[in-house]
Amino acid sequence: MKKVLLLIACAGIIVYSCAGQEKAMTKKTDDTTKVSDTIRISSDDEEYDIVIFEAGFSAWMTSTARPRNYYSQQFLEARNQVYVTQWNIRVQQPSRYNSMWYEQEINYRSTVDYGYEVNYQLYYYFVYFQQKYNQKLAAFPVRI
Image 1 (cartoon, rainbow, N blue to C red):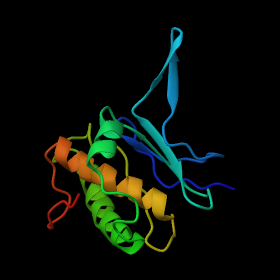
Image 2 (cartoon, one colour):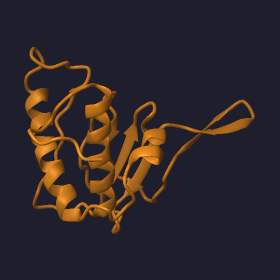
Image 3 (cartoon, rainbow, N blue to C red):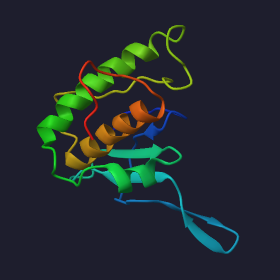
């Protein structure tokens, strides 16, 4: 059975169960098909999925992100753990941090192997989020 990794409404990331892997979803408007800013990927074993809904993220990923395998999975996991921890702290303090950006905690466990793709997409969403909203989720600088 598929497992839920995280769920963040409106802020941009939703991870949920899904059967297949897609790089970009399309939406049909009138008689034309357009690529949306929704990216759906899954881990190699397709046990975990991540779906990112964020205007501009898909174009930013294409033009800015390093190619896959530029960073090791261990690097991505370490950075994601730091970013997720800070994200969850901000979710718990809505009077201090904008609750429109930090709506729901991310259930990311360091003991679970989510696979390279999930970690890659999550890492680059955090990079994008920090740049777009001028946020700093860690003491170290953002590495693209």
